[in-house]
Amino acid sequence: MSVQQRSGRDRQVGDTVDLREYLEPVIRQKRLILVTALVVLGVACTYTFTRPSVYTSTATVLVKPTGVNLADLGPLGTEKLVNVDTEMQIVRSTIVAEKAVAAMNTDATAVELLKHVSVSAAPDAQTLEISFSGPSPSVAQQGTAAFADAYLTYRQQQAQGLVDSQLREINASLMADQARVRELNAVIASSPSDSVKARNAQTERNSVLVSIRRLEGDVTATTLLNTDPGQVISDAQVPKHPSGPNRLLDVALGLFLGLAAGIVVASVRGRMDQRLRSTTDLEEVLGAPLLAAIPSVPGGGDGPASLVVTHDPDAPASEAYRALRTTLMAVTQPDGGTLLVASALPGEGKTTVAANLSAALAAVGKRVVLVSADMRRPRAHELFGLPNDRGLSNILTGEALADLRGLDAHVENLYVCPSGPTPPNPVELLQSGRMRDLLANLRDVAEYIVLDCPPVLTVADPLVLASLVDGVVFVVDASSTDRGAVTDARHRLEQVGATVLGGVLNKEPAPVGGMYGYGYAYGYADEGIGGKSASRRAG
Image 1: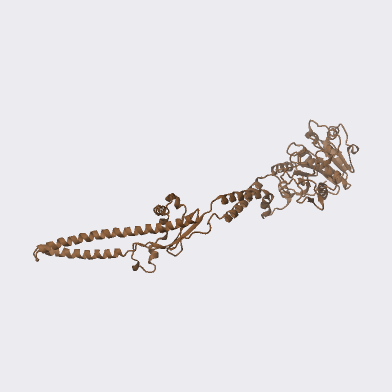
Image 2: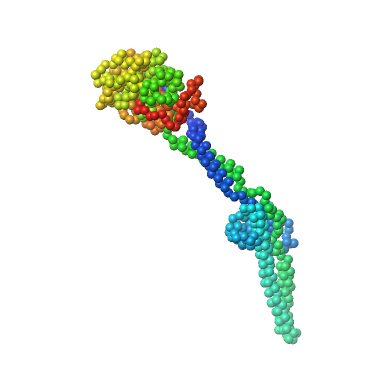
Protein backbone atom coordinates (compact mmCIF):
# COMPACT_ATOMS: atom_id res chain seq x y z
CA MET A 1 0.00 0.00 0.00
CA SER A 2 1.36 3.40 -0.93
CA VAL A 3 1.62 6.43 1.29
CA GLN A 4 1.45 10.05 0.18
CA GLN A 5 4.93 11.52 0.40
CA ARG A 6 4.93 14.48 2.76
CA SER A 7 8.60 14.58 3.65
CA GLY A 8 10.08 17.96 4.42
CA ARG A 9 13.14 16.94 2.42
CA ASP A 10 11.10 17.39 -0.76
CA ARG A 11 10.19 20.98 0.01
CA GLN A 12 11.95 23.73 -1.82
CA VAL A 13 14.14 25.83 0.43
CA GLY A 14 14.54 29.48 -0.49
CA ASP A 15 17.67 31.51 -0.24
CA THR A 16 16.10 34.17 1.97
CA VAL A 17 17.13 34.48 5.60
CA ASP A 18 14.37 34.11 8.18
CA LEU A 19 14.97 36.67 10.91
CA ARG A 20 12.98 34.57 13.33
CA GLU A 21 15.68 31.91 13.13
CA TYR A 22 18.12 34.32 14.75
CA LEU A 23 15.67 35.97 17.15
CA GLU A 24 14.12 32.76 18.46
CA PRO A 25 17.11 31.70 20.64
CA VAL A 26 17.20 35.21 22.08
CA ILE A 27 13.47 35.44 22.78
CA ARG A 28 13.45 31.95 24.23
CA GLN A 29 16.07 32.91 26.80
CA LYS A 30 14.62 36.26 27.85
CA ARG A 31 15.08 35.32 31.50
CA LEU A 32 18.80 34.88 30.95
CA ILE A 33 18.92 38.26 29.21
CA LEU A 34 17.04 39.88 32.09
CA VAL A 35 19.29 38.32 34.74
CA THR A 36 22.45 39.33 32.86
CA ALA A 37 21.16 42.87 32.40
CA LEU A 38 20.29 43.15 36.09
CA VAL A 39 23.72 41.86 37.14
CA VAL A 40 25.56 44.34 34.93
CA LEU A 41 23.19 47.10 36.02
CA GLY A 42 23.89 46.23 39.65
CA VAL A 43 27.63 46.43 39.04
CA ALA A 44 27.20 49.79 37.31
CA CYS A 45 25.06 51.15 40.16
CA THR A 46 27.55 49.92 42.76
CA TYR A 47 30.39 51.50 40.84
CA THR A 48 28.76 54.88 40.28
CA PHE A 49 27.11 55.32 43.71
CA THR A 50 30.22 54.34 45.68
CA ARG A 51 32.45 56.81 43.87
CA PRO A 52 32.91 60.17 45.62
CA SER A 53 31.57 63.32 44.00
CA VAL A 54 34.02 65.32 41.89
CA TYR A 55 33.87 69.09 41.36
CA THR A 56 35.45 70.89 38.41
CA SER A 57 36.37 74.57 38.04
CA THR A 58 37.57 76.21 34.81
CA ALA A 59 39.54 79.38 34.04
CA THR A 60 40.07 80.94 30.61
CA VAL A 61 43.53 82.33 29.81
CA LEU A 62 44.33 84.63 26.89
CA VAL A 63 47.73 83.66 25.45
CA LYS A 64 50.11 86.27 24.00
CA PRO A 65 53.36 85.70 22.09
CA THR A 66 56.52 86.61 24.03
CA GLY A 67 59.92 87.73 22.76
CA VAL A 68 58.38 89.91 20.03
CA ASN A 69 57.45 93.58 19.70
CA LEU A 70 53.68 93.54 19.68
CA ALA A 71 53.60 97.00 18.08
CA ASP A 72 55.29 95.65 14.97
CA LEU A 73 52.74 92.84 14.45
CA GLY A 74 49.61 93.02 12.39
CA PRO A 75 46.15 91.73 13.44
CA LEU A 76 47.06 88.11 12.54
CA GLY A 77 50.62 88.25 13.76
CA THR A 78 49.92 86.80 17.20
CA GLU A 79 48.08 83.79 15.77
CA LYS A 80 51.13 82.88 13.72
CA LEU A 81 53.52 83.22 16.65
CA VAL A 82 51.52 81.30 19.29
CA ASN A 83 51.39 77.51 19.05
CA VAL A 84 48.36 76.58 21.13
CA ASP A 85 49.29 72.89 21.27
CA THR A 86 52.67 73.78 22.75
CA GLU A 87 51.04 76.05 25.32
CA MET A 88 48.70 73.21 26.36
CA GLN A 89 51.69 70.96 26.95
CA ILE A 90 53.33 73.68 29.04
CA VAL A 91 50.23 73.89 31.27
CA ARG A 92 50.49 70.14 31.94
CA SER A 93 54.26 70.19 32.44
CA THR A 94 55.94 69.18 35.68
CA ILE A 95 57.52 72.62 36.09
CA VAL A 96 54.13 74.37 36.09
CA ALA A 97 52.68 71.67 38.37
CA GLU A 98 55.46 72.22 40.91
CA LYS A 99 54.64 75.93 41.00
CA ALA A 100 50.96 75.03 41.50
CA VAL A 101 51.88 72.71 44.39
CA ALA A 102 53.66 75.59 46.09
CA ALA A 103 50.70 77.92 45.52
CA MET A 104 48.14 75.42 46.84
CA ASN A 105 50.26 74.50 49.87
CA THR A 106 49.26 70.84 49.47
CA ASP A 107 50.98 67.57 50.33
CA ALA A 108 50.21 66.18 46.88
CA THR A 109 53.04 65.82 44.42
CA ALA A 110 53.21 67.48 41.04
CA VAL A 111 52.51 64.16 39.30
CA GLU A 112 49.43 63.57 41.45
CA LEU A 113 48.07 67.05 40.72
CA LEU A 114 48.53 66.61 36.99
CA LYS A 115 46.01 63.73 37.10
CA HIS A 116 43.31 66.27 37.96
CA VAL A 117 44.20 68.86 35.30
CA SER A 118 42.76 69.13 31.81
CA VAL A 119 43.45 71.74 29.14
CA SER A 120 41.56 72.55 25.96
CA ALA A 121 41.78 75.27 23.35
CA ALA A 122 38.91 77.14 21.79
CA PRO A 123 38.86 76.82 17.99
CA ASP A 124 40.31 79.81 16.09
CA ALA A 125 41.12 81.63 19.32
CA GLN A 126 44.24 82.29 21.38
CA THR A 127 42.67 81.07 24.62
CA LEU A 128 43.20 78.08 26.87
CA GLU A 129 40.55 76.45 29.05
CA ILE A 130 42.32 75.21 32.19
CA SER A 131 40.23 72.93 34.42
CA PHE A 132 40.97 71.26 37.73
CA SER A 133 38.87 68.53 39.38
CA GLY A 134 38.84 68.02 43.12
CA PRO A 135 36.87 66.39 45.91
CA SER A 136 35.32 69.71 47.00
CA PRO A 137 34.29 72.95 45.27
CA SER A 138 36.99 74.98 47.05
CA VAL A 139 39.78 72.57 46.07
CA ALA A 140 38.62 72.63 42.45
CA GLN A 141 38.61 76.45 42.38
CA GLN A 142 41.96 76.69 44.16
CA GLY A 143 43.60 74.15 41.84
CA THR A 144 42.38 75.87 38.69
CA ALA A 145 43.57 79.28 39.85
CA ALA A 146 46.92 77.85 40.93
CA PHE A 147 47.60 76.21 37.56
CA ALA A 148 46.50 79.29 35.60
CA ASP A 149 48.75 81.55 37.68
CA ALA A 150 51.60 79.03 37.61
CA TYR A 151 51.39 78.83 33.83
CA LEU A 152 51.45 82.60 33.37
CA THR A 153 54.23 82.99 35.92
CA TYR A 154 56.37 80.37 34.24
CA ARG A 155 55.79 81.86 30.78
CA GLN A 156 56.57 85.38 32.07
CA GLN A 157 59.74 84.22 33.81
CA GLN A 158 60.78 82.36 30.70
CA ALA A 159 60.21 85.43 28.49
CA GLN A 160 61.89 87.84 30.92
CA GLY A 161 64.83 85.50 31.25
CA LEU A 162 65.27 85.44 27.48
CA VAL A 163 65.19 89.26 27.30
CA ASP A 164 67.64 89.62 30.16
CA SER A 165 69.99 87.16 28.53
CA GLN A 166 69.88 89.06 25.24
CA LEU A 167 70.48 92.38 27.03
CA ARG A 168 73.47 90.97 28.83
CA GLU A 169 75.02 89.83 25.57
CA ILE A 170 74.35 93.19 23.86
CA ASN A 171 75.65 95.24 26.82
CA ALA A 172 78.78 93.15 26.97
CA SER A 173 79.45 93.81 23.28
CA LEU A 174 78.64 97.51 23.76
CA MET A 175 81.03 97.86 26.67
CA ALA A 176 83.79 96.16 24.68
CA ASP A 177 83.25 98.52 21.74
CA GLN A 178 83.25 101.57 24.03
CA ALA A 179 86.52 100.45 25.59
CA ARG A 180 88.02 100.01 22.11
CA VAL A 181 86.93 103.51 21.15
CA ARG A 182 88.74 104.89 24.18
CA GLU A 183 91.88 102.96 23.21
CA LEU A 184 91.72 104.27 19.64
CA ASN A 185 91.18 107.83 20.86
CA ALA A 186 94.38 107.56 22.88
CA VAL A 187 96.31 106.31 19.83
CA ILE A 188 94.99 109.14 17.68
CA ALA A 189 95.84 111.71 20.32
CA SER A 190 99.41 110.44 20.73
CA SER A 191 100.20 110.13 17.04
CA PRO A 192 100.85 112.78 14.38
CA SER A 193 97.67 113.50 12.54
CA ASP A 194 99.19 112.66 9.15
CA SER A 195 100.79 109.43 10.28
CA VAL A 196 99.61 106.05 9.03
CA LYS A 197 99.00 104.93 12.57
CA ALA A 198 96.70 107.82 13.27
CA ARG A 199 94.80 107.31 10.00
CA ASN A 200 94.31 103.55 10.72
CA ALA A 201 93.13 104.27 14.24
CA GLN A 202 90.69 106.86 12.91
CA THR A 203 89.24 104.38 10.41
CA GLU A 204 88.80 101.66 13.01
CA ARG A 205 87.23 104.09 15.48
CA ASN A 206 84.63 105.09 12.91
CA SER A 207 83.77 101.41 12.37
CA VAL A 208 83.48 100.76 16.08
CA LEU A 209 81.27 103.82 16.53
CA VAL A 210 78.89 102.38 13.91
CA SER A 211 78.79 99.11 15.87
CA ILE A 212 78.08 101.03 19.07
CA ARG A 213 75.12 102.82 17.48
CA ARG A 214 73.81 99.46 16.21
CA LEU A 215 74.16 97.86 19.64
CA GLU A 216 72.44 100.80 21.30
CA GLY A 217 69.55 100.25 18.87
CA ASP A 218 69.52 96.56 19.80
CA VAL A 219 69.25 97.47 23.47
CA THR A 220 66.28 99.69 22.76
CA ALA A 221 64.60 96.99 20.62
CA THR A 222 65.21 94.30 23.20
CA THR A 223 63.70 96.34 26.00
CA LEU A 224 60.57 96.67 23.87
CA LEU A 225 60.17 92.89 23.50
CA ASN A 226 56.93 91.56 25.07
CA THR A 227 57.38 89.54 28.29
CA ASP A 228 53.66 89.43 29.16
CA PRO A 229 52.46 85.84 28.33
CA GLY A 230 48.80 86.73 28.68
CA GLN A 231 46.15 87.07 31.31
CA VAL A 232 43.23 85.31 32.94
CA ILE A 233 40.13 86.64 31.23
CA SER A 234 37.71 84.33 33.05
CA ASP A 235 38.54 83.58 36.69
CA ALA A 236 38.04 80.15 38.21
CA GLN A 237 34.69 80.02 39.98
CA VAL A 238 33.62 77.84 42.90
CA PRO A 239 31.47 75.12 41.28
CA LYS A 240 27.96 74.75 42.69
CA HIS A 241 27.30 71.24 41.41
CA PRO A 242 29.52 68.17 41.05
CA SER A 243 30.81 67.39 37.57
CA GLY A 244 31.00 63.69 38.21
CA PRO A 245 30.32 60.93 38.37
CA ASN A 246 27.43 61.17 35.92
CA ARG A 247 25.31 58.62 37.73
CA LEU A 248 22.38 58.79 35.33
CA LEU A 249 24.68 58.14 32.39
CA ASP A 250 26.47 55.33 34.23
CA VAL A 251 23.17 53.62 35.08
CA ALA A 252 21.89 54.00 31.51
CA LEU A 253 25.16 52.70 30.12
CA GLY A 254 25.08 49.78 32.56
CA LEU A 255 21.57 48.89 31.46
CA PHE A 256 22.51 49.11 27.80
CA LEU A 257 25.66 47.02 28.24
CA GLY A 258 23.73 44.53 30.38
CA LEU A 259 21.08 44.05 27.72
CA ALA A 260 23.73 43.79 25.02
CA ALA A 261 25.71 41.25 27.03
CA GLY A 262 22.54 39.29 27.80
CA ILE A 263 21.57 39.16 24.14
CA VAL A 264 25.06 38.01 23.15
CA VAL A 265 25.13 35.34 25.87
CA ALA A 266 21.62 34.17 25.00
CA SER A 267 22.44 34.06 21.30
CA VAL A 268 25.65 32.09 21.83
CA ARG A 269 23.98 29.75 24.28
CA GLY A 270 21.04 29.26 21.95
CA ARG A 271 23.35 28.41 19.05
CA MET A 272 25.39 25.99 21.15
CA ASP A 273 22.31 24.32 22.63
CA GLN A 274 21.67 21.23 20.53
CA ARG A 275 18.29 20.43 22.03
CA LEU A 276 15.22 20.67 19.81
CA ARG A 277 13.40 23.71 21.10
CA SER A 278 10.55 24.19 18.67
CA THR A 279 8.53 22.67 15.86
CA THR A 280 10.74 24.53 13.40
CA ASP A 281 13.83 22.84 14.85
CA LEU A 282 12.18 19.44 14.57
CA GLU A 283 11.10 19.90 10.97
CA GLU A 284 14.51 21.23 9.99
CA VAL A 285 16.50 18.37 11.54
CA LEU A 286 14.06 15.56 10.78
CA GLY A 287 13.48 16.74 7.23
CA ALA A 288 9.79 16.01 7.62
CA PRO A 289 6.73 18.01 8.73
CA LEU A 290 5.39 18.18 12.26
CA LEU A 291 2.43 15.86 12.70
CA ALA A 292 1.44 16.87 16.24
CA ALA A 293 2.68 18.36 19.49
CA ILE A 294 1.66 16.32 22.54
CA PRO A 295 1.49 18.04 25.95
CA SER A 296 2.91 16.31 29.01
CA VAL A 297 0.49 14.07 30.86
CA PRO A 298 0.67 14.71 34.64
CA GLY A 299 0.89 11.61 36.81
CA GLY A 300 0.89 9.28 33.82
CA GLY A 301 3.73 7.16 35.09
CA ASP A 302 4.25 3.82 33.40
CA GLY A 303 0.77 2.43 33.96
CA PRO A 304 -2.65 2.66 32.33
CA ALA A 305 -3.01 6.35 33.29
CA SER A 306 -0.66 7.14 30.40
CA LEU A 307 -3.43 5.97 28.04
CA VAL A 308 -4.95 9.43 28.28
CA VAL A 309 -7.17 9.05 25.18
CA THR A 310 -9.36 6.51 26.98
CA HIS A 311 -8.89 7.61 30.59
CA ASP A 312 -9.30 11.39 30.09
CA PRO A 313 -10.77 12.18 26.66
CA ASP A 314 -11.14 15.88 27.48
CA ALA A 315 -7.47 16.37 28.41
CA PRO A 316 -5.28 18.58 26.19
CA ALA A 317 -3.10 15.57 25.39
CA SER A 318 -6.15 13.65 24.17
CA GLU A 319 -7.01 16.49 21.83
CA ALA A 320 -3.43 16.46 20.54
CA TYR A 321 -3.61 12.71 19.84
CA ARG A 322 -6.85 13.23 17.93
CA ALA A 323 -5.06 15.87 15.86
CA LEU A 324 -2.26 13.36 15.21
CA ARG A 325 -4.85 10.79 14.14
CA THR A 326 -6.45 13.24 11.73
CA THR A 327 -3.11 14.13 10.17
CA LEU A 328 -2.05 10.51 9.71
CA MET A 329 -5.40 9.55 8.20
CA ALA A 330 -4.88 12.37 5.70
CA VAL A 331 -1.42 11.22 4.61
CA THR A 332 -2.30 7.51 4.33
CA GLN A 333 -4.59 5.75 1.90
CA PRO A 334 -8.30 5.53 2.79
CA ASP A 335 -7.93 1.84 3.67
CA GLY A 336 -5.31 2.53 6.36
CA GLY A 337 -1.69 1.48 6.59
CA THR A 338 1.14 0.02 8.62
CA LEU A 339 2.87 2.56 10.87
CA LEU A 340 6.06 2.31 12.90
CA VAL A 341 6.33 4.63 15.91
CA ALA A 342 10.03 5.20 16.59
CA SER A 343 12.39 7.48 18.47
CA ALA A 344 16.12 8.12 18.54
CA LEU A 345 16.78 7.30 22.21
CA PRO A 346 14.96 5.71 25.17
CA GLY A 347 12.61 7.74 27.33
CA GLU A 348 11.12 9.92 24.61
CA GLY A 349 7.60 8.51 24.94
CA LYS A 350 7.21 6.55 21.71
CA THR A 351 5.36 3.66 23.40
CA THR A 352 2.88 6.06 24.97
CA VAL A 353 2.41 7.79 21.62
CA ALA A 354 1.89 4.47 19.84
CA ALA A 355 -0.69 3.31 22.39
CA ASN A 356 -2.66 6.55 22.42
CA LEU A 357 -2.52 6.85 18.63
CA SER A 358 -3.92 3.34 18.34
CA ALA A 359 -6.72 4.14 20.78
CA ALA A 360 -7.50 7.39 18.92
CA LEU A 361 -7.76 5.54 15.59
CA ALA A 362 -9.99 2.91 17.15
CA ALA A 363 -12.25 5.63 18.58
CA VAL A 364 -13.33 6.64 15.05
CA GLY A 365 -14.25 3.07 14.09
CA LYS A 366 -10.92 2.05 12.56
CA ARG A 367 -9.94 -1.55 13.22
CA VAL A 368 -6.47 -1.23 14.78
CA VAL A 369 -3.82 -3.70 15.94
CA LEU A 370 -1.00 -2.41 18.18
CA VAL A 371 2.04 -4.68 17.92
CA SER A 372 4.66 -4.40 20.66
CA ALA A 373 7.74 -5.12 18.54
CA ASP A 374 10.07 -4.04 21.35
CA MET A 375 11.10 -7.46 22.58
CA ARG A 376 13.98 -6.06 24.65
CA ARG A 377 12.29 -3.62 27.06
CA PRO A 378 8.55 -4.05 26.37
CA ARG A 379 6.06 -1.70 27.98
CA ALA A 380 3.01 -1.47 25.72
CA HIS A 381 1.20 -4.27 27.58
CA GLU A 382 1.52 -2.30 30.83
CA LEU A 383 -0.44 0.62 29.42
CA PHE A 384 -3.40 -1.68 28.78
CA GLY A 385 -2.99 -3.79 31.93
CA LEU A 386 -2.29 -6.95 29.91
CA PRO A 387 0.01 -9.86 30.73
CA ASN A 388 3.13 -10.44 28.64
CA ASP A 389 3.57 -14.19 29.01
CA ARG A 390 2.63 -14.78 25.37
CA GLY A 391 2.91 -12.50 22.37
CA LEU A 392 4.94 -11.56 19.29
CA SER A 393 8.00 -13.65 20.14
CA ASN A 394 5.82 -16.76 20.45
CA ILE A 395 4.20 -16.06 17.08
CA LEU A 396 7.54 -15.52 15.31
CA THR A 397 9.05 -18.71 16.78
CA GLY A 398 6.03 -20.74 15.70
CA GLU A 399 4.83 -21.44 19.25
CA ALA A 400 1.52 -19.64 18.71
CA LEU A 401 -0.76 -18.35 15.99
CA ALA A 402 -1.95 -14.78 15.59
CA ASP A 403 -5.58 -14.66 16.71
CA LEU A 404 -7.35 -11.34 17.24
CA ARG A 405 -9.56 -12.96 19.84
CA GLY A 406 -6.51 -13.38 22.04
CA LEU A 407 -5.37 -9.78 21.48
CA ASP A 408 -8.37 -7.98 22.93
CA ALA A 409 -7.26 -4.76 24.70
CA HIS A 410 -10.72 -4.11 26.20
CA VAL A 411 -10.99 -1.05 23.93
CA GLU A 412 -13.50 -1.20 21.11
CA ASN A 413 -11.87 -1.85 17.69
CA LEU A 414 -8.39 -2.08 19.28
CA TYR A 415 -6.29 -5.22 19.66
CA VAL A 416 -2.86 -5.37 21.32
CA CYS A 417 -0.18 -7.93 20.57
CA PRO A 418 2.31 -7.92 23.48
CA SER A 419 5.96 -8.61 22.79
CA GLY A 420 5.95 -11.89 24.71
CA PRO A 421 8.97 -13.42 26.48
CA THR A 422 12.30 -11.90 25.49
CA PRO A 423 13.96 -14.08 22.81
CA PRO A 424 17.74 -14.42 22.37
CA ASN A 425 17.59 -13.19 18.76
CA PRO A 426 15.04 -10.35 18.37
CA VAL A 427 16.58 -8.92 15.17
CA GLU A 428 16.56 -12.24 13.37
CA LEU A 429 12.93 -12.88 14.33
CA LEU A 430 11.82 -9.46 13.10
CA GLN A 431 13.71 -9.99 9.85
CA SER A 432 12.16 -13.39 9.24
CA GLY A 433 9.49 -14.27 6.72
CA ARG A 434 7.06 -14.96 9.56
CA MET A 435 7.13 -11.26 10.49
CA ARG A 436 6.27 -10.29 6.93
CA ASP A 437 3.50 -12.88 6.86
CA LEU A 438 2.17 -11.64 10.21
CA LEU A 439 1.90 -8.08 8.96
CA ALA A 440 0.24 -9.22 5.76
CA ASN A 441 -2.29 -11.34 7.68
CA LEU A 442 -3.04 -8.52 10.09
CA ARG A 443 -3.64 -6.13 7.19
CA ASP A 444 -6.32 -8.49 5.95
CA VAL A 445 -8.32 -8.07 9.16
CA ALA A 446 -7.32 -4.57 10.38
CA GLU A 447 -7.09 -1.16 8.76
CA TYR A 448 -4.18 0.17 10.79
CA ILE A 449 -1.22 -1.75 12.14
CA VAL A 450 0.78 0.33 14.66
CA LEU A 451 4.17 -1.05 15.71
CA ASP A 452 6.11 -0.04 18.79
CA CYS A 453 9.86 -0.68 18.61
CA PRO A 454 13.15 -0.05 20.44
CA PRO A 455 15.01 3.26 19.93
CA VAL A 456 16.66 3.64 16.54
CA LEU A 457 20.13 4.47 17.88
CA THR A 458 20.33 1.58 20.34
CA VAL A 459 19.66 -1.58 18.30
CA ALA A 460 18.99 -2.63 14.71
CA ASP A 461 15.39 -3.78 15.34
CA PRO A 462 13.73 -0.51 14.20
CA LEU A 463 15.69 -0.50 10.94
CA VAL A 464 14.39 -3.96 10.11
CA LEU A 465 10.80 -2.93 10.86
CA ALA A 466 11.14 0.40 9.01
CA SER A 467 11.64 -1.47 5.75
CA LEU A 468 8.42 -3.47 6.34
CA VAL A 469 5.99 -0.62 7.06
CA ASP A 470 4.33 2.10 5.00
CA GLY A 471 5.63 4.97 7.08
CA VAL A 472 7.50 5.96 10.23
CA VAL A 473 6.17 8.34 12.88
CA PHE A 474 9.20 9.79 14.64
CA VAL A 475 8.79 10.87 18.29
CA VAL A 476 11.10 13.36 20.01
CA ASP A 477 11.09 14.67 23.57
CA ALA A 478 10.66 18.46 23.62
CA SER A 479 12.66 18.70 26.84
CA SER A 480 15.68 16.53 26.14
CA THR A 481 16.16 15.31 22.56
CA ASP A 482 19.14 16.91 20.80
CA ARG A 483 19.72 17.59 17.14
CA GLY A 484 22.56 15.13 16.75
CA ALA A 485 20.47 12.16 17.90
CA VAL A 486 17.61 12.97 15.52
CA THR A 487 20.02 13.54 12.63
CA ASP A 488 21.76 10.19 13.20
CA ALA A 489 18.45 8.37 13.51
CA ARG A 490 17.13 9.97 10.32
CA HIS A 491 20.23 8.95 8.39
CA ARG A 492 19.88 5.34 9.56
CA LEU A 493 16.24 5.25 8.51
CA GLU A 494 17.11 6.75 5.13
CA GLN A 495 19.71 4.04 4.56
CA VAL A 496 17.04 1.32 4.76
CA GLY A 497 14.64 3.25 2.50
CA ALA A 498 12.17 4.16 5.25
CA THR A 499 9.52 6.79 4.64
CA VAL A 500 9.38 9.23 7.56
CA LEU A 501 5.86 10.64 7.55
CA GLY A 502 6.66 13.30 10.12
CA GLY A 503 7.57 14.06 13.69
CA VAL A 504 5.70 14.18 16.97
CA LEU A 505 6.94 16.71 19.52
CA ASN A 506 6.20 14.93 22.79
CA LYS A 507 5.99 16.43 26.30
CA GLU A 508 5.42 19.93 24.98
CA PRO A 509 5.02 22.53 27.76
CA ALA A 510 1.68 24.09 28.54
CA PRO A 511 0.84 27.40 26.85
CA VAL A 512 1.12 30.64 28.82
CA GLY A 513 -1.95 31.16 30.99
CA GLY A 514 -2.62 27.45 31.48
CA MET A 515 -5.17 27.19 28.66
CA TYR A 516 -4.83 24.84 25.74
CA GLY A 517 -6.97 25.37 22.70
CA TYR A 518 -10.63 26.18 23.36
CA GLY A 519 -11.04 26.13 27.11
CA TYR A 520 -8.92 23.12 27.99
CA ALA A 521 -7.17 24.06 31.21
CA TYR A 522 -3.96 22.59 32.51
CA GLY A 523 -4.08 21.45 36.07
CA TYR A 524 -0.32 21.18 36.40
CA ALA A 525 2.72 23.40 36.26
CA ASP A 526 4.30 24.43 33.02
CA GLU A 527 7.64 22.68 32.83
CA GLY A 528 8.78 24.69 29.83
CA ILE A 529 10.83 23.45 26.93
CA GLY A 530 14.23 22.63 28.23
CA GLY A 531 13.00 22.78 31.84
CA LYS A 532 12.56 19.90 34.24
CA SER A 533 11.11 17.13 32.13
CA ALA A 534 8.74 14.40 33.11
CA SER A 535 10.26 11.18 34.37
CA ARG A 536 12.11 9.39 31.63
CA ARG A 537 10.44 6.15 30.60
CA ALA A 538 11.92 3.16 28.84
CA GLY A 539 9.32 3.25 26.05
